[in-house]
Length: 228
Image 1 (cartoon, rainbow, N blue to C red):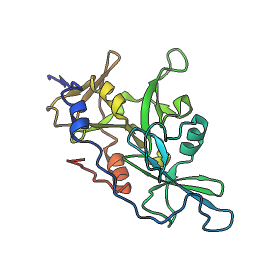
Image 2: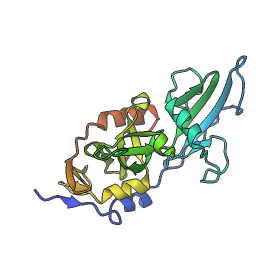
Image 3: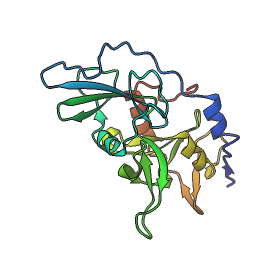
Image 4: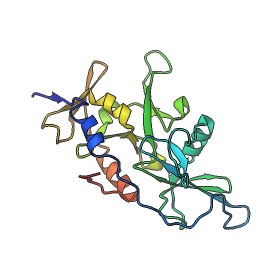
């Protein structure tokens, strides 16, 4: 069977440019950063963009200069990340508790965003994916056969921490790098079937699709976006 490699300039990169992340709906939640709804409880509000950068939700400018960069803070913040199962601020679908501090979080796509492939920590070991700009402090094992792509948007996903739904987004720069190895048996408008990575061919399992659909539902996103 003939497999057609996806060239980033003709497919994935074109999709990222022609289908930018849609503007996030404006939230009219009434909150004040650091508010105290009850004694000794403080509440803060954050936003994660599709590149995995973390900001205070009410920051007017969201760019590299305004994002939170301290890796030890990011490790703790994302290690505590979970679904918001409280009855407060449900438009923020995630929560990172810290003692009596509640950190409510909303995101562009998914809260876990993979940014880099890291080499094995020892010879013959497994590569890992780093997420949310914490370097080696936040990683999951890299499982090439479990990459999953939404053909309608060109976005690529990979298994993530179970506490946050078991799936994370691959940021655009890394997805474009991966695109050099994606192969399609039924054309670019169907999901890829194989992935070539460092000379090895992996048959994609697509087992992430149910988890991805559930996560996008919980985040208030269309599970089959055709124009996002």
